[in-house]
Length: 378
Image (tube, rainbow, N blue to C red; front, side):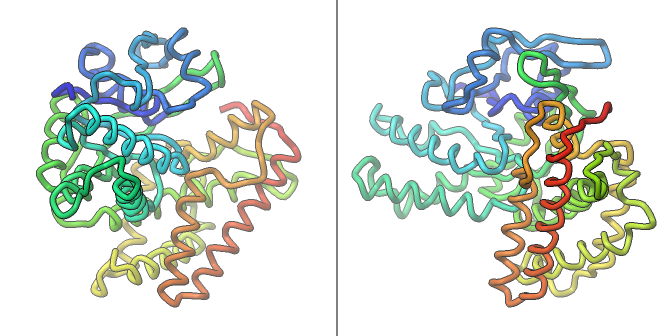
């Protein structure tokens, strides 16, 4: 491990936005680098061409040498690893982490050489991903690829898995070699989960490098995920529903055009449904007021009124490519499915049905847009 270094996996819209902040707007490049996803088809092209950013100073180029190999091929691990892929790729990253650990043990080292891992993708997944990591570690022990990790090593390793719930934004324009990344303004990321000392160390390093990271002292990672889910569902999911009409015509909406008076009752019902599931899994205590949660969401949306939600950007990008499919983005899938599953487990059958119907409504709209395949200009 190389102390005081940060790896960002992979170089997507969020990862590039983090990179821009952590390098003090590309002026200090010594301690931050990108990692490729294992098996990524685009990694070689990015290493050859680099990445193009659109900043207030104009177009800037990131040299391809700052895109390192994947975790398994990396010679020296970073102290902190920001994991920012699509949520459906997180389990692959957990597999890679276990393989890295096996490699370390074969070299005569142990878990202390692992980075502090900050999961920063959107979604409600921390508990599941943590459980998957434990299962994969135990499987490694079962097949003799790892030593017995209980009772000391396992909690230490799992304590290094943190959740970074972020309001950092970033855009991606174009595709392939024409891709241009547009980092958003600095946004806070709250660190939860894992051990407090690891959250504090990760926060100290990331802030020293120019980031905006806050250590969450009280609220659980799942509580923060539910709070962020409300923003994502209101802006991204309902945003897509409102952005696509019954002819399949797509309009690129900003938050202030999504959360409008005519939609408030539907947004309120969404908040109340998510809140009920959150109470069922103890993310929200019985004393919490759901109306206060709703009003806080409206304030949050007002602060980001001019932002174009990432899922609407994704729809438009795929319309430009002619590749829009009638299916959910990974962000929506990793919100709706956990919510539906938790609702059923908590005996909230009507609420589970609500999320199923919401999914069907969105897929219907995406089906209409996919059949039309006509993008709009931002």
